[in-house]
Length: 303
Ligand SMILES: C[S@@+](CC[C@H](N)C(=O)[O-])C[C@H]1O[C@@H](n2cnc3c(N)ncnc32)[C@H](O)[C@@H]1O
Image 1 (tube, rainbow, N blue to C red):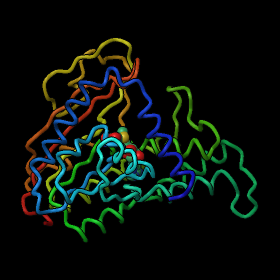
Image 2 (image 1 turned 90 degrees about the vertical axis):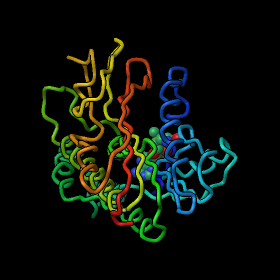
Image 3 (image 1 turned 180 degrees about the vertical axis):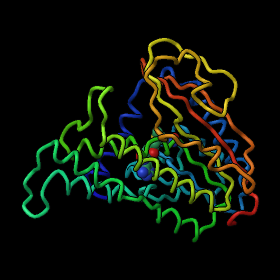
Image 4 (image 1 turned 135 degrees about the horizontal axis):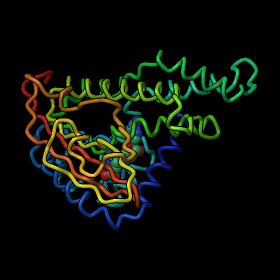
């Protein structure tokens, strides 16, 4: 992983940890209970994998079977986890999308001419990148290889999938040296649309590797980010998450998994979903996340 990428992930983690946690109690209780159930249900004779393990704020490592590996691209995540949980777990630091270094190379090629190093004009670079992004297909090869070698019985995805697009956005902004996005929501933004499509491809490829793994899956991810001062309500489960949000009419709602229906993609005849819930996480004043937690039991696929 390149230095700017590693630095960026470390900064994201730091920003996550230094936020005001005072309103996070409900979220932390729910996610620790969900992931803790996954760890306790895991077959201790088989490897367990925790993706997006981070600093372990959301992961009850005390419940993890001995052969549990953490996976997080933040170079400090393992140390943070060791400090918090007194456990030096085996760790993988690779990019879970497999596509960030390709994205980084593409942005570098568009912001400056590769042959002269001369920076292109902002508008020209934006259009070039928007045109180049559809040719990028993130491939989580490292994750697939790890699965093939270790054949985990249980995989926890601990609030990482919704970060794929956030990290990609920050990477683009960093290399552009500022925001390349259109500010007016009424005006089309071809670059944002192309990056959303990249994020969607990354999440679909990631889920396909999990699907093929033959492991039980415990997935937690940001399903939506809602910007609102007014309190929001949540009705009982609706397949379409937007319908579950009460008081969200006319609010700014963004979808970190652009248009993806994880339940529909992962469910079906080969996998049996046995937990499905959502809750609201007041991340910061005026910003709430709708968190989705889904558990699927393997039924002989790939395992
Ligand atoms: C919201 S935090 C999750 C926190 C974590 N579950 C915990 O208990 O501390 C998202 C984590 O995903 C990691 N991450 C984001 N994008 C990643 C990627 N493409 N590959 C690997 N890790 C990534 C970040 O470094 C961060 O630790």
